[in-house]
Amino acid sequence: SRLRVAPGSTTPGMDVGQRDQYPGWGLDGATLHREVPPDRWCVTSRDLKYFRGRVEENISSGAFGPTERDPFNHGDLLVGPSMYTVVDAYIQPLTHAAGGMSWALLRHPEGKKC
Image 1 (tube, rainbow, N blue to C red):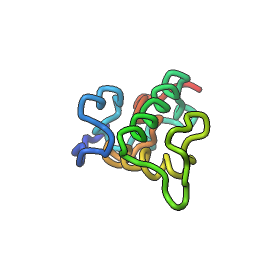
Image 2 (spheres, one colour; image 1 turned 30 degrees about the vertical axis):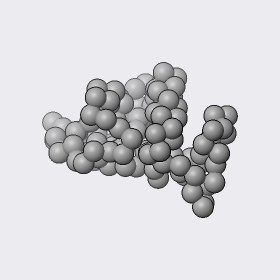
Image 3 (cartoon, helix red, strand yellow; image 1 turned 90 degrees about the vertical axis):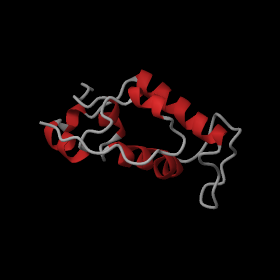
Image 4 (cartoon, rainbow, N blue to C red; image 1 turned 60 degrees about the vertical axis):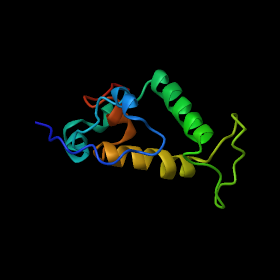
């Protein structure tokens, strides 16, 4: 059975009401990665649209922005930040606070067929 972990501190750019968008929140990421086969660590086009919206909201709210390494134009919705910036500023803090699983397993803790 999956172990529950404490949800951790509030993740920058995310309010508690958004946790319902992450069914894996509070589950043990290491256990999920052991129990769910890698070919089921997938996301849907709906997930990608949600992801893009969250990144845009985080940039707009000032949760993260341009850096010396990635001086992206926060108003450019076509190019936006690099994936390095998105991973460092959004994905890693979110998944760490949630329990240490991938973003795909955070959205689909039982796995999603690719």
